[in-house]
Image (cartoon, rainbow, N blue to C red; front, side, top):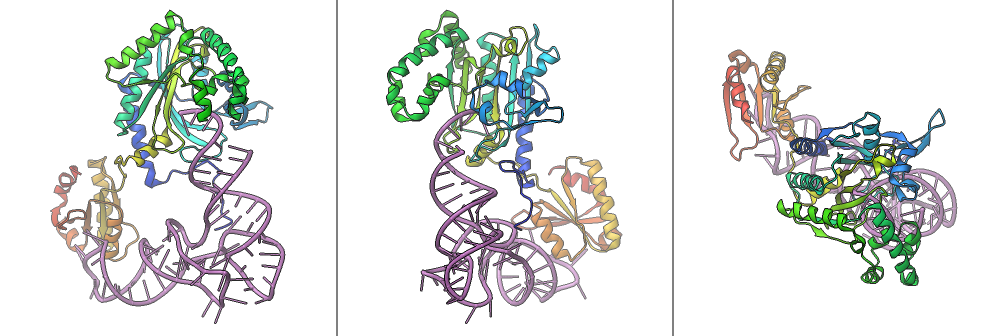
Length: 422
RNA sequence: GUGGACGUAGCUCAGUUGGUUAGAGUCCCAGAUUGUGAUUCUGGUUGUCGGGGGUUCGAGUCCCCUCGUCCACCCCA
C-alpha cells in the first residue's frame, strides 16, 4: 500500500460512480449552448507562456505564482492553460474568426492552477465557458447571462445569487484607479495587510477585501459608477433592463471586481453560500480590449466560465438527483448451452435496443451468486437462462426492484418489447 | 506560499495512563438452499497501524523529520 504510486497533488481521478454525473452535466450544457446557437471550439491545453502573461496580466496571482510552466526541448516557455479565454482569442485570431465578424463559441475542458487544493479547488479543474465576439451592446451581455441562468436551472441548482457590476471603459478605470489610490493612501494605516500590499499592485482588488475593518472604511470610498460617462451608464442600464425583461434577478454589487486584468465594463458572478469558501460558481464579463491587445483589430467581447467541480459539488449539496448510469438489465445463465444462447441473445438485444444498458454475467457460478451480482449492478431486471429456457426458446424475466418480486417467462421474440420501456 | 486538523483492513471507524498474538461494521468468498438476489444464520480471506528516525525492557499510542489528505487564509471558476 504505502509504496503505491499516487496521483499528483490536486489532480483527481473521476471514478465510474461519479462519471455519469459529469457526463450528464456535459450533455445538459451542450444542449443549452446549442439552444442559443453557440458552436464548440476545441482548444489545446498548452500554450506559449507569453500568451497568458499578455492576456491575464503580468502581475496577477495566476501568472505570478499559479501557472504550470516549463521549458520544452527547443527552449520555449510553455504553460498549461490556467483559463480558456486567452486560448480562445488566440485561436480566433489565428484562424480569422474574429475580424469584422460575430462569433458565438463555447468550450469545455481541464484548466491548471498551482494552488493549495481545498474544497472546490483543485490543480486540475474543469471549466465550461462561452465567448461572444463582435457584439458591443448590452443585448449580448444579457444573452450570455440568460444562457448561464438557463444552464444553472437545467442542472437543478437553486438559491444562487447573481451579482452584477460595471468596471467601465479602460479610460474610466484609469481615472477611478487614481481616485481610489488617493483615497486609500489617506487611510493606509487602517487597511489590513493584504490590502496595503494591493494598494499599488492592484488597487481595485482592495474593494474585494474580506477584512470587515477595510470594508467599513470602503463605505466612504469613491464609487466607480461616479466616473462613468453617458456611454457606460447607458450600457449598464441597458443590461439591467434586459435582465429584468427576462425575469432574471440581479443584484448590483459595486465592489465586484475581477482578478484577471482583461475585464472591462460588465462583470458578473453567480455565487452560493453552500460551498464553504468557494462561493463563485460561474463568473465572467466583458473584455473589449483583449482581442486588440493580442494583435487583432478592436473587437468587443463578452464571456463567462464555470467550474464543473463546483457545479457538481453544489448538485450534491442540494441533493439534486443525478443519474447513476448503472445497468438496467443483468443476464444470468446456467450451463454451457445457456451461456452460448445468452451471449447471442444479449447481442441481439443490443442491436434492437441500442440505448439499453445490459450486462451479461461472466465467470459462471451458482444462480444465487449471479443474482446477487445482478442486484449489486443496480439493474431493474434480471434475465435467467438455463437448459429448460433454451429448449423452449424462452427466458425468465425477474424484477429486482419491485416491492413484490415478480417473475415471468417470455419467449425470446417478445423480449425486445418487454425491455423497450426501461 | 501561510495556518490548523487528520493518516489503523478495499471502504467507514474503535483501539484506555505505552503492555502479550491489533479489533468492529461493511465489502468480498464459501456453505445452510445441486435453478432464485437485496433479509437471516455459520465459517473464511483481507494490515508495512502512511514512511523514516528517536525515547523505552516494550510504541498503533510519546518525540522529531517527512509524505499525503482535508479545512481555512490567500486567490479564483
